[in-house]
Length: 303
Ligand code: GLU
Image (cartoon, rainbow, N blue to C red; front, side):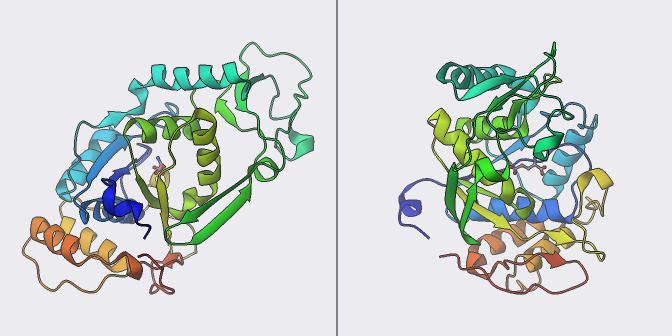
């Protein structure tokens, strides 16, 4: 772990999209991010990522928050909801438009078919749309590298891999990439600990932070939980929701999936979290995805 962590107060967060009930993978991310923050006496925030109003399921955020309560994972400070934060995303977008980093794009999905769905440098729209998207300009050769705390150095040519990516969609909704960068900075998050399904998004987020003059937090991407067929568990599939009546079982399972040594008998959630906080060893977190029927494999190299 780099020396700076010892002096900077740690701020972690858990940021579920309210598209379905929390499942075992969500508990892994929630507990992993909570432990990373709490073991150093840091803060832990909860943010409801309901930026995609089309996919957000009514009432689901409340259900997710109730599950977190049952798990004893209490947020510091108010719960932030992306649906309340349009003005902040607009401000960031205006700045990127002013600097010329962002541009209005009239391309439709069909227009982009020839470039494998990637937008690169030039709008190829056949006709102007009343509702254009706004994209970040990302020329080929825009390389972003970072040190993932579990997976080591990750590097991506964002221009090559993704191209000019969307910040505000043609349907007027904010893109996740913009919202998450603005919110992590606003909440002063220093450690983003989340599932490896988002590993691919991190270079885009770091690029946006650089263009907006925002700090880059430390990143650690936890192993994904896969079902018996090797598919990632997904909230929108309602895959194995957590049973809020059995919170200790869900925590113990996540603890084991984090590769941690057994804690022995604990009376309740509170006692579990207290002991977990004292015994947590990030160096034991497995790097490989976990099939729910199988055991964790390789170890990470934290600290
Ligand atoms: N909202 C995302 C999800 O529920 C997580 C985003 C993040 O942690 O950056 O999968």
